[in-house]
Length: 280
Image 1 (cartoon, rainbow, N blue to C red):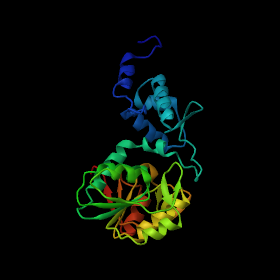
Image 2: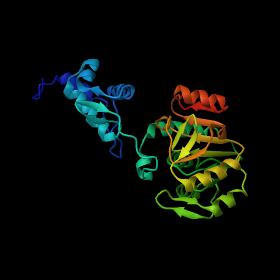
Image 3: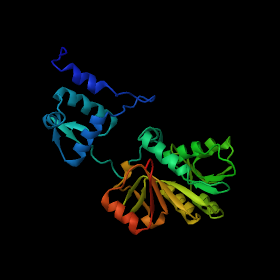
């Protein structure tokens, strides 16, 4: 027993495998992931119920909840835990914050997406954190050309084997995306073998994004593409956002890290969207 009266084996078990990323973000333990799944399945669950379920002390559960709250995964309330309140539809998180969210899932998605690219293709790369990671993945690809409205993607590819083209237009601050009528008009002069889209949310009613300005450019990429591939991690399933980009039939392929919930899975099948689950 330690000085707080807690079994030392529990303390060691809780601490084992718990670490931080280089950015300081907490990596969830297996129990914390299971605990979060329990909270998601119910509107509210008490500390006592969780402790009994996992066979650990309430103090251990409180430490887990504190870590998960710090990650933004849940909120502690009234002797238990609840899911965070949904953010307003127009509340776009800063790009740098999104870059460090769901990194492992995005890495899997990017690896799977890169395998879809063939030599001599011309590809479109939308703005977004996952498309930026894809740009980093393909910098050594030979015989490939890319166009993008993301200045971050353009700078990543500028000193690589991949020639990169950008439209003219207005730069949207913080997101560093090129938007506006001129950008849309210029993209109409290109033709793409594949376009890789980033999205803010997806449900059975369609594809969604935070930004009206970025959505207009996404739609221009889609119109000019032989194949449209969405890169979206499972945290965005069954959600909506400010702007509806279009229906699910806008997509040819969805690359993600986990199986979609049943309603979305049925809708994707009905829309004849190929589902690629990274890691499978």
